[in-house]
Length: 620
Image (cartoon, rainbow, N blue to C red; front, side, top):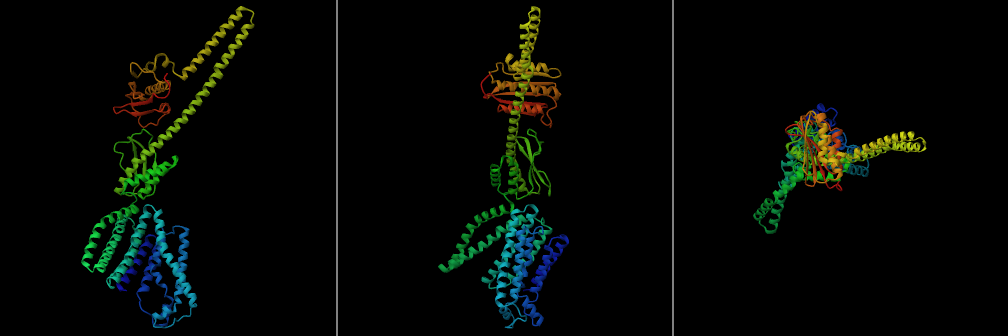
């Protein structure tokens, strides 16, 4: 081998190893690179056979040491990126491979025929194991060495499937450097079979000897030197494409020459086939390579399909986890999470819809649904422009899923509160009837019994008067209970006038205006009660909290539903958390299958709007 190539192949790994040892003292790859450089120099710098007795002994013992030319680089592949084995399995696998290296070296030292062929028929100077034993050791060791070499490919692939962010970039540097091995083998075959042997293979061998240690050093020390994903994707695209073009061209040229004896026709046919096939092949190959390297950044449709499939298959309580995992897989990143940063109905500030975060920082994308922020999608890794665009698309779709889950949770909570409220109402009615009306009626019965036993008319009249008062009190208690169940004003004057009466009772610092259709159609009883309670609660909030001067209440019947609007010119809701009153209004609307929203007015103040469907039962 050329001295310059030997010197470069030995010096570069040693220099890179020293830099790694200084920069990453605990990473064993530095010492392995130094050992590789030293072994490369010792084994290749002194070609030929020794003539001294000591040299002949060294030749015999070193017949199998050629495995050291690649052993240390193979061990580095098992240890990248963090200097540790990927799992206990791979640790024992490497131990078995190292045992195979020892067995092969011991067995190769007993290869008498190989030694004799290299030393003009001379016998090995050292007595050794019997030939069958040496042969068995050598064969078994060679098998284990081969498994160790090919196992490194599987180990790197295993780590790549699990690695994220920086670890994945480091492994991609190793993969890119390892591509020099098939390039060198292909170059050697072309050099031998087509060019008759020359310097081309030596140059390719130098590419491996220098390029692979350099990429290992970059992977450990400067893995963000440039975008290795772009370089690797282009390399994996065009390298096999070039090889395929050369192979197809050569095969067609050779075939047509053998069949028709016309090399020119074969050349034209080969050019035509290559011209037609190269672009489709390049497109398919590039798409597959970029998906492996970048994820689904170049295919937003596939990313959205992945998100939809994960969301559909997710457990109802695990939707957020499934969405985060789908985004991580689509972007080939780690550390994705969904954060609930705002309550439903909270409007995002203007312009707060773009990804935030500088270079090297976590990226935060607000998830917006109909102008309201339902959460934030966080990615704990820097992203390029294509990834940011895809993340924005995924965030918009994820917002719909998250909002649907929030609505489902709100509906479940609302139903639970409705059931709990109904049971509490029943308990209150039972208590009031048992502790109030019941004892009062029992007292009336006792008074009537006492009245019947009195012979004196004056005493009987006095007891009857007391009984009359107690009956009136019981009637008042019954009326109170009835009024709590349904406001009596609705039945007495109708819903619109009942709201006007309520507004009149609240008037003071706030001027109320209640409007509605002149002839309100018959409404279901549940709708009337819900509309009255919602409007009454909204007017009460205006008086207590809004600091408003005017408040307008409007009823509208349209589209098969009743709309109740309460708007004021006060300070607005701001970012205050919904209180008991807001929650009660929403629950009353949700109980009927309607909606109730509380939002700021553009001109200032608050707008409460309830949409109540009329198809909820019979009319009042």
